[in-house]
Image (cartoon, rainbow, N blue to C red; front, side, top):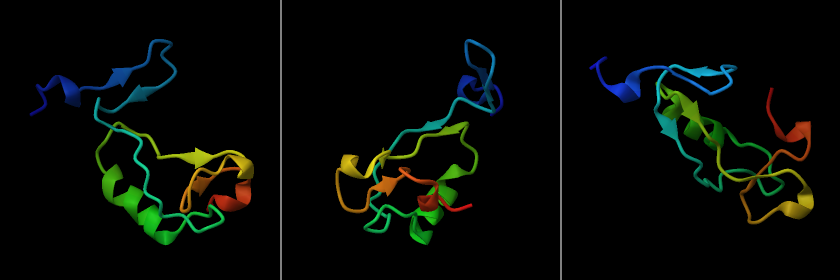
Length: 85
């Protein structure tokens, strides 16, 4: 299976990042965050279950300002307190 092109590493143009393969999970909205935008355990599990062997995982919608919230369950990155350590 190692002969498949999509399983080979990929280095971005400016060579600052190399992905272990070319498999990318695109951004998908989960609506799993708490009402205030805080990450839930279900949301963490969602990403853990899918992250396994992919080269890049793009998270779903996240607001960077409380006024930018688009829907209930949307992840917020407006403040560090919303992001677990």
